[in-house]
Image 1: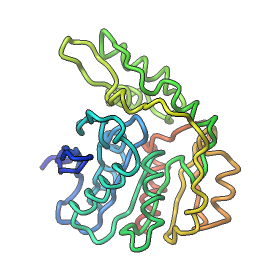
Image 2: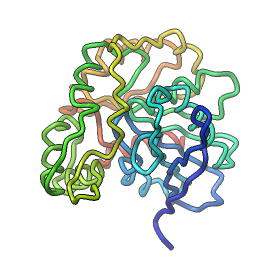
Image 3: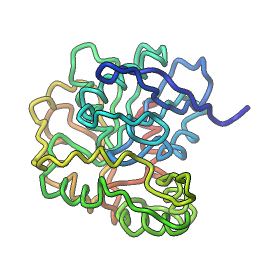
Image 4: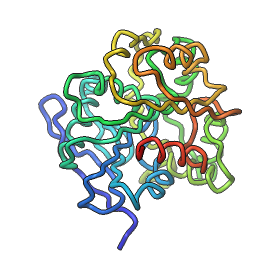
Length: 280
């Protein structure tokens, strides 16, 4: 029996139905479902280590959001954004058949988790936020998106992996094998044999980057929350973490020293913290 099965479902983007790719780990009839959603420029493979560890107890669904990984790219780039992403996530939960799910979201994926969990009747029982909170300063967003939307070309996969490691060095902590996987998972091969990054450059948009402030919905989240915090993060600051522990759902915190935005969810400590939290 394979470790996982790669599947697709249909989502509506504007006037067009598109294919959304997701990966299912664990027994297909397990009613205990965890949904994993990646960050801005990432893809579902970021959760492979975590999903493998959770699969004996959980059915884990990790998804490629539109414009990433194996999910469809949009001709109309203006449709990329949270309204579409929320619709995709609701479709994934529906496809799972679960009455409720545990949500594990990295950066953008955590933002989506907060948006959905704050709504009445949301089918989310526990929320894990990987290096994201209700407030992100514009400076941190600019730093995170410094290379976002560029469309580089690499003569070899190894050259591409080296580029990813150079531009995403704050991720981790990863072993050497972990960096190799993370780098390869970030790339796709073109028909001419060159390599490039595994997302649609049109995702970048080009609008102004401002503070992201969702403190207004934070009190509406009434489920247990765990925040994985890279202590060197420019996206999730110490001041925001402090406020998150004292207001709204009063998050628990698992801090990862020496890591910025964002923790890779591959270490035993991170995995054990998440498994204990969603299973508690």
